[in-house]
Image (cartoon, rainbow, N blue to C red; front, side, top):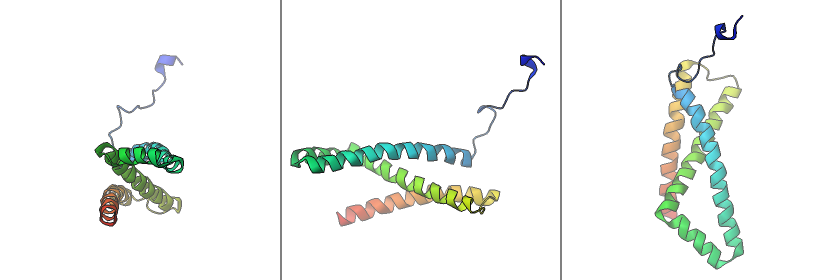
Length: 128
């Protein structure tokens, strides 16, 4: 058999993007974003332990519009990743593999992460 005669495996250009495929990609991206968010948390904690000037600088940055956007994104990534993890935990029990259920869980993960993020921020501003 010649190398040119063998079948080629389908690549991304062949597949139609599906919600579950996009959710898998977003789950990986949010996992990476959580790493960066954890570095921000560590920066905040180190600044708090270092002294008032360092802490004020971090608080100024995190309180700026850019810092708030980053924190909002971190909150969403955390909640989206958590809900995706719960979805996978359900699958680990052998449940939820029916096509309508898979689609419903994916949509619930999106809606739930957005709704919970907004709720967390509303409560945070109300209590702060």
